Image (cartoon, rainbow, N blue to C red; front, side, top):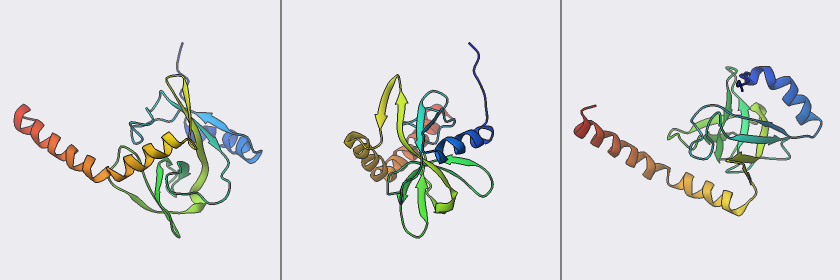
Length: 152
């Protein structure tokens, strides 16, 4: 079976039509910025229309002014939003509400569906976000040890 490789840009009209009609839209995101929660090219996410204001730990799909599509978690709200991928240590500040296309309401991994309103999901979000600095420190230590002992 061959893999269908379609850019999100090409799917945007269909996605927008579904969302505007009040339906959800499922697709397979690419990239590593949302590891360990989402594995690019393997897991699927279900997008739904945005209802009201997004909150901390919501997972919107948005499009930057440069045209790049991003699927990152909201880690701070205010007049603009601050977002970050689970596999990133640098926060993206200044994300505008007008950039948002939809919000992830569930994702599927290894055949099992997880809803973003489940308590276990919210606990994961809180723990993962609040251990960001500790994970960054561990990453740096691990990288230095690897250079020392493996000569990289």
